[in-house]
Amino acid sequence: MALLKVLFVCVHNSARSQMAEAYLNVLGGGRFEARSAGIEPGELNPVVVEAMRLDGIDISQNRVKPVQEFIDRREKFDYLITVCDETAAERCPFVPGTGKRLHFGFPDPSALTGSFEEKLAAVIPIRDAIKRKIREFIEQEGMS
Image (tube, rainbow, N blue to C red; front, side, top):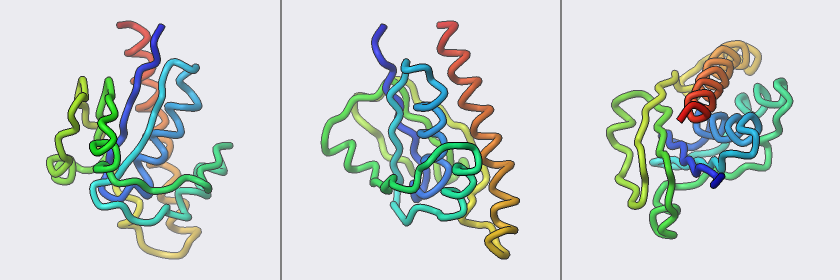
């Protein structure tokens, strides 16, 4: 069976798309090749790095990438999945060679305020929601 290639896109590639990429690669049983990118790449969110570490996944060495990088390389994906809010998802550029386009909306961890610990407490439910949605996606793909 061929690997399903998935590109997760959010605004900055600093949090949601990084988590989705990591979960699909870890939980996908070797059936998926997940990548992530941002519309306007920022910096990897240290609160998200810690939240993922607490769930046993190290994304500390990941780099943020612009979606244009994948367009320029003419990479082909079976799925392009936006993980930002609806408004930002509409700004996601067309990626040639992409099969299905899906949207999984999640709150933006970069919008959180407070201490590191307060932000971490707020990121964990977002992380867990992303993990649940990725598990659902894996199950649905197993049925098709």
